[in-house]
Length: 266
Image (cartoon, rainbow, N blue to C red; front, side):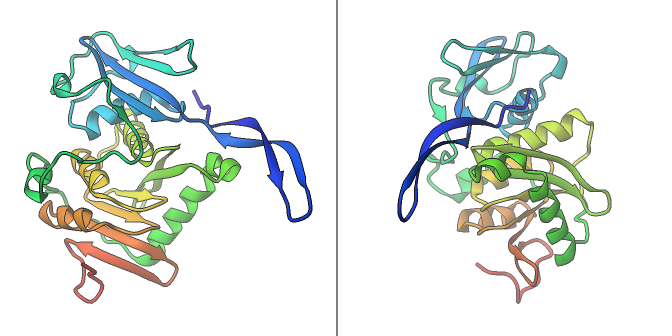
């Protein structure tokens, strides 16, 4: 399933006149995830790569692993999607509020401090691959070239998993950056990819919640086009991870394990 955008009537206002026409807008709809016990997540997102989204969300939120062949997708009367694994029972899902809609701005809103945020997250214990600026720019450029939804709408986040020598292993898009990460983690899992030494690429910024998702996925390195938050930086250091932010052709900011002190920006 690959439904990223839809032609929608708009009024394009120019300096001298306006035009009524159709424009491609990123699709945003309700995506409800269910296991054998019922609904465990309600997401607002883009209805593409939905089985990968389910598998990836379970991994990045620490629920466990779902069987791909067991997942069923149903379209609702309201235009949303019900994504269900009828035999999977996921750990920890009974602690969630299934009626709480998770949007792209949702993070660790109820945690009082960093200790509570990183408590229970796995530290990265694998080998950190050697990276350089040219490699990251090449990977981010390739990811952007594969973001067909962004090219059409200008309104979709991208995420990719890259191996330093094998290149891009998977790319996903979504109106929500968390969903894009979930999808690409799911794509990698379904391909049987071991994430040790891999790099998570982001088309935007990196917040704490993305660090947490990467940690649960076994990814130790994140590279992003945009900024890195203070909590993301603190969490990366605490979990033996590293973040490369503001990746540009002649500049980057390195934070965390293996970061050189003159590039390490608090």
